Length: 314
Image (cartoon, rainbow, N blue to C red):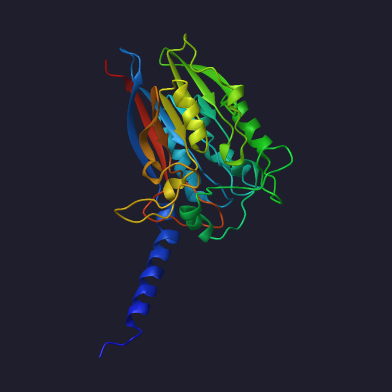
């Protein structure tokens, strides 16, 4: 007779094996994805953009630092950092060291909530409850009307900002900027993190400048209000992070949650976003780190992305 406890033990063993894989291997199995996006003017030469996101650096993550160092060997035309660099208040030197070789290239950046606030322990069921409630990624409101994290440790984000600025990277937190790349005048419009309601679209409204060869939008968390605003204004490409690609995914199915109001089908990779009169490409990076208190990934390896911009079809 088959023992009554064999099925529960089998399930437990499978679960334990998955946890060992998720925490011991996949979370450090760094990948580079390559994507082509046709948004350049006719006749322009391709432009290669390296997007790094959600590093969530903790002191001692030597393998992650070495991998980020190695990305400089790609020699991108531009680096776009879409935020959440920190998961440790003491992690700023490690982030700046890891990104040091990449800061030799032109770059732009926005911040995420974890650049401002230290991580907190959260129940895993919080994310699953969002499937039913629709209350994605809500935090406590602070007295300014923005959203903050009550009682959280404040990260030294000013030091991170100063390091990026000294390298010549453009700060796009509710700001615009321009760079000349491959002979093209490229305009950037960015938002501070919508996840904690630091975004202020009124500060950057107006849409792409008519004299720019290309205008790109950058934001950490791909909340629909930000995507709608960028798309309605006619930006051809929006770059975002935040979602971790779902982080714990089901093989052959995908993500269950996005930690924002974006639908799981677009949790990572290249897709499109549509408003009544415009359509934009949207690229969401699955990022290369995790919150220090949930250091696991399953069916969603850590990544950076090399986007090759090419001329749009006529």
